Length: 130
Image (tube, rainbow, N blue to C red; front, side, top):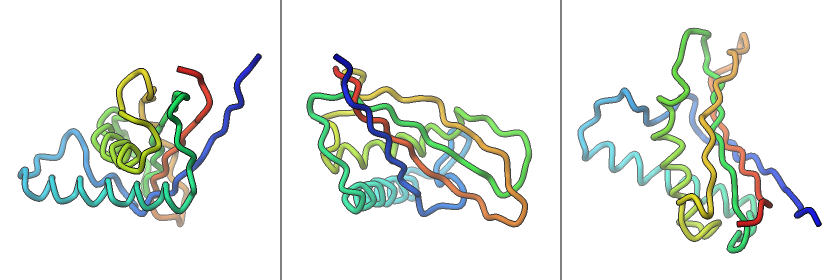
């Protein structure tokens, strides 16, 4: 028997990643930004009415469509993905962000589209049994 799989998309309120592995922020502003992102993710999950996944594994992937095309490193986006995932844990989507509950994919960078601002979104696939 195959478990049902559902995929959700959370459109994030950012035009570019707020946190990157290459940013060298002081711990104070970085902490404030991380708290804001966690709160944003919690609010978006609540608005989307995401179901609690106590017995199911989720797979998450951050997507970024920048304003301009230039070379970018997908793994540089992991701090943003991590903060958003922590907000989903705060919401109660999963008990923790460790491997029994969550599979994190490397963020995807999409080509820029002429005339559009940058955007970020998170895909959450729910349904793989633990």
